[in-house]
Image (tube, rainbow, N blue to C red):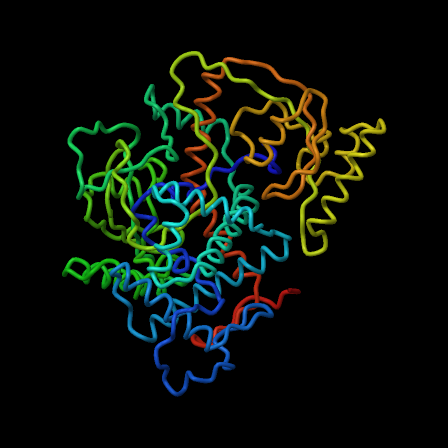
Length: 508
């Protein structure tokens, strides 16, 4: 499968649809180094030097002043969500770690030339409003009422869109799903419809609607506490981490608030969100998690689970099935957003006639050296050469930066929804043999040529495509964490709060 234009499944595609996950304001999840507009509480004398250094991430400095302001912003958001705020030193370390992760992703976006336009932010805002059954003006009032400025909210959405583009570009290529994987998955499904998570909206257990009829896959919202085990840790370190996990489990069984313990003790990226990992179909959670929560009711917790990352304790926040749309209700806090996912087709049940498109493309990736203007200019030049008679396939072999280049940019027969939206929209507008203008996607800039179209019964192929997407959903979370680990390992990080330095100095 070619990586330059195919549409990756994303574990974040539910963020716009589900009330529970929308309660977390985007700023809390983003952890940006940009100062917040909310006033900071009175700092201790030793922290009042705004030019003091909290951490250095490659060549970017995070100051104590920025950290203090970010703590105030996150504290306000946690209080809105009724998540207990950890003790001072623990809270400061958690917030700083979020800021370090955010700085690494921002630097990676700059290095690879990823930019988010104002138009993309506008579309995300419209989608957030629509999914919450609000107008944009009503959403604007909700944001201001929460204490966040509109400019700050736009900036946070921009960061989320950028991070999602990073995931699409770098995480998808790490996931390999073989035909045998698909075969095994389909055997476990039998004749049942495969999960279609983008369409599913769970009903909160506290507000049942007796007349509604459950449909679709079971949906589960999970939170976790992760006690991370360092790579190549000695047995004594593993034993120490297990004891730490056992102490945490005892606290929870004694009635301690899960979100508060997660915020204070978890090493997971969702710690300051109470450990909440969002909601998805049960079968889309990693097998380790799905098996552990199979018989756990909403509100229940698991025992200690061990994975390659460390020790996990899970809480089933809620579980249920798709229902008819709930009545209009304003969000309790500013809703988070991700780019709107591509429309999913219904489950296959009988002949499914689909129009396929045979296409080629030339991909020019953006980077620190090749910006948008240069990539677009290169493709415009190539397009002129094609119009004067040069072969699209030969130019693709020479200039395309996609894995399809040796095949002359040939992507084969593409099904609806198989490529990212920008690519598909441009491709669908072309006649046979026509070449597009330069098209921007999360992977870079493309020239697209349509070779032909055909209609085919895709019943079996569609089930396999659904299975592949379901497997992608299941694996993309761990792959994303691995990618973040790799960014951290390759970076120079000087954490002054923990007095630790790691990685190597990069060229950024």
